[in-house]
Length: 117
Length: 110
Image 1 (spheres, each protein chain N blue to C red):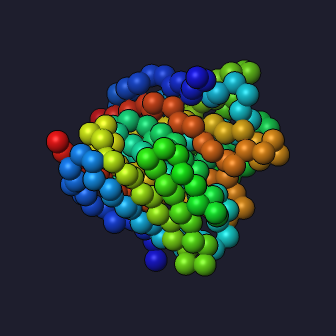
Image 2 (image 1 turned 135 degrees about the vertical axis):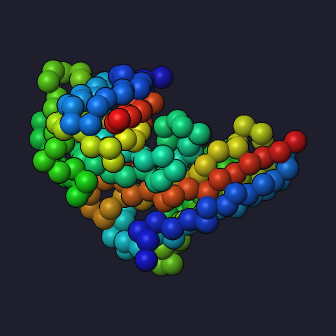
């Protein structure tokens, strides 16, 4: 069964450092997403990406965040200057486009646990 | 009002029990509805989409009431492996972004 993969599984970084979280979405999916979950809290939407551009972003996704699809398979989330409050689990997800009859069923990767010290 | 509201639980039930979870959502323009399950420190896994007519998948039955903006999940014949947090999830109106509830914890004991 196809699945979303993410690397690394755990990233520890110092405050102010840049991190890049990587994801490989399911191969025939065209919508890609990043969500985060702070420990003990609910899953929160960060950004959606379609056709090589951001289609929607939340207020959490400020200028410190960026996303990129550098090649045909990877989808990355960059945090330029990490803060303590960026510590969370970051989940990548992907879905088929609605035009193909998809109901926006999003499939999540195993996550990257980011710890900012 | 929270965008997606769920009873946090925990629901502690014996194996074989039937348990029901409820959820309300605030955005009347939401079009897609889901139940995900999340095990501790793992990713949300899609359990089932919820259709207007209600739908069943094995021991799991989901219902949607658009007028009341209410979604339910019924689990019959609970198994130990059903122990998890169940997340009620809706899309944000016409957009693809998903709005998650905080989840309802289920603990099934022998």
